[in-house]
Length: 389
Image (cartoon, rainbow, N blue to C red; front, side):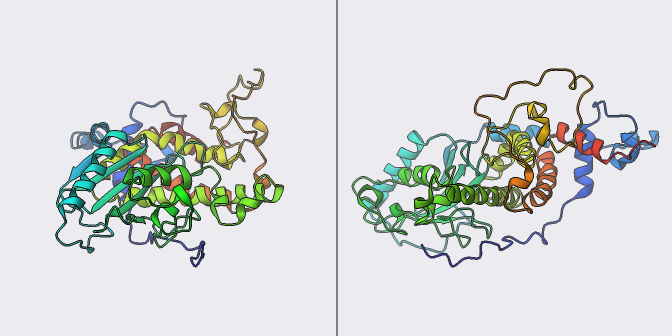
């Protein structure tokens, strides 16, 4: 596979994104109305200060955006039809007048998708353009893609199923996998974009759209994408290979976080409800994972339900410990928790600073979507409190 892409590119341009600070502050104020904050915090944060009595009467009703997002998310089907796509990558491609045999086969694939889609894959097909399909895949647990949303546009050619479909990845200018280029190219033997043998290649009699999506989920979005690069599999289970794989996972998770922001700010057509609802539900665990990784743990390792259970030796120290934690015995690590490594054990010293910036951006975006961010904002406020004199 030729790598003619610049992996270090910044990807999408964030300069044209304007964050509404007033709207964000209102959301924060709404969330903390009934919260018992540390003494003095309100005085240091403008949006927590008391409103004058004469202004209280004019205060608008609290936003119900969170409830709306939840309702739309719970009603979002895994498979559904839409009228058309205006922003589809292949919208300008035209198959002409479809044949009866082609239409029948495409409808057969639709039925397979509607019936057998695995968890964490969502699909929309167009009634006016049967050749167009869009899919969202949630990154699997235990991988650097966990809890992320990844979007793919599909074009079904006129010679289908004699030939495979064409697939474009919404990269946002980021190459998060050796098989997913920053220009949207998807390298997969099943698609004919990479060499393969036997059942790895497209078979008109057996291959389906369902197989394509499952292959992307299972073969590309895996726990060690470094070894997807041709020739690198020979380094598997070697010290050099494992170190390089961990470094690649660090970089991939940073790109995954940036992809989350990209999707939140520019959700693909017909998937805005999924994006808002997904990150409302999963925002808490994503933020917890960011803190877990900044404490030195491996990307994809199990995140404890209570961060206080992590070994204090590698804690960043910004949250503080309870008064009883010094005398209580340390809990045993949970099964499956990969032992933490010191932050300086990472090859790149830029990982923590980069993730810290992304963490702050995600915290703001998730909060606006109605995610459970109270714990993280309280920690942020405590950290920003002036030191006692």
